[in-house]
Length: 294
Length: 174
Image (cartoon, rainbow over all chains, first blue to last red; front, side, top):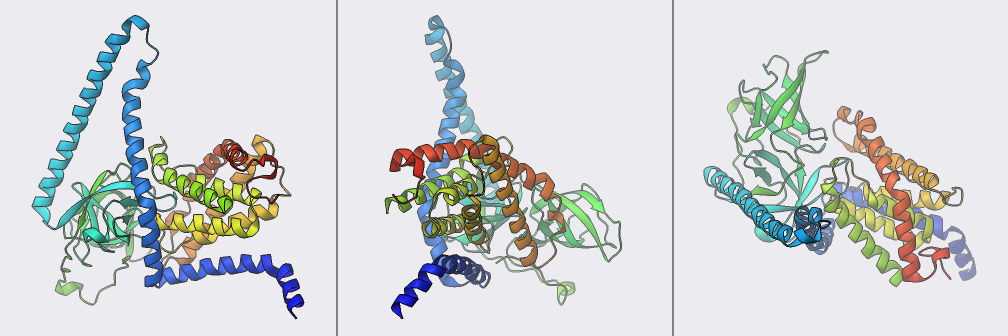
């Protein structure tokens, strides 16, 4: 019996392993869909291990990039000019550093003003990595559960909404950007107050869904958060309508929107810490439910 | 053990490169998928069990740092690995063009699989995704395929340096 069992294992061991591995991946997908705690714990643990390296690499790349900008073009100069060029390089570097400091200062001042104006319970975070896959749109930030960041919290910048927290680890978190296919945010057209749902369609673009054909909306209209749902405060800038399509039949019209934030150049972001009480106007009760990633 | 730990560390290193260094690429949204290339290299030079587990771990790590909440890559990467294993004897992988084609086919197939899974599991139809098959998937697969031959060469050099068995690949038994 043992020999037969061993023979069967030798014969079917590899196919069985392949099937088991793929089944395991499917079970994992199912567990993730059901948001089981065990998977989240394991995710957080692995993220905690990998993210410091990610942070260090980003820092190194930025430093090397800065050094290259300053020195690489000065390497092949004539000997008699070397000292002079060296001085120029030093001055340029100093100048560059000062410019960088000035820019950082301005950015920080803007962030601070924005923070004071909007909500005191926000924390600043640095973007340390991007989505490894080009199909999905997310970034990794250097703040996590230890800093009070929780799943579903809104992530914004002075120029508008960036996304919401998708996964958390003790000191790091993954933020789902508004341009991701899985992102959905309740919003209104600022001028006409027409309600819609903003969904990502990748490529730094979003679309407005469930925008009633009867509601007025035009190219150039600003779209802001509605405050419904509880994740985002009301009135935060989402973007501008770039295209409207009323062709075809149906109750709704189609609108394409470009986010107000350049999501490819993110460096610092804010996470809104306090839960925002959802706005519940009378006419909203009993209307459509909102698809939101929690 | 060294033969499993070192490739795993290399995989983590490549993942970090993909999430940090590659974002400074001029064409921001079209980045070569160096982890897919690594998985393909595992497929042509690793043993099925250890390689399968490594491919799964690579996919799992990708899911972890991705906005993909369900974990598509933990499924797709082992599939890519086993497909590469299955076809490695049937593919002539010596020249630039053959490696290019090999990687291009797998990149396109994996992209289609992800696309199908996204469409199947998303609560609403993702109509906006279809144009991406031409504007994103094909260019992305092209760039991935383009960097495959030099990366395969580097992996081969690394494995011969570390394991002193260049002719046997990184994982074959002596």
